[in-house]
Image (cartoon, rainbow, N blue to C red; front, side, top):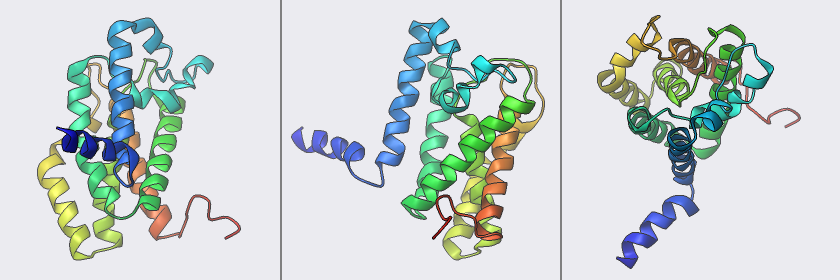
Length: 198
């Protein structure tokens, strides 16, 4: 039992796994907040073109309206995040920040008036970035990763189509776009966060 607890603790203490474990815990906390205090969670949502909704650029990915929403987003976040994390911690961190901030800003500027929450925009960004790697760095590992992503998660692409089921299709679309743009910035233009002055 102690060995199991020690192994679990390492997921939160040692790189590279804490890049995924702590966001997963934050997603669970945001889900519990939404269940126990919907009004508090609503204040952390991204609401386009409202000053009070700007906070959601930073907080909305961690808020999920119920356990089903959380359960739908957690596995692809962990799987696609792991595929991205294999390329290194620095690239992972830069990619996540660029996708999350870019997707959130585009959604705040251009999304429909609604309370947008959930990690799906970032997940779609992972999806787009991993596919783009097959183009920019066509090594065997990246080609295999892109093929696996298409095989197991290709159906996600339906999520960028306008829908009336209440899901944030704009967040999905902007996330996918930011994943592709992030790869283009990194591999075509050599852009790196924090690279100025280097």
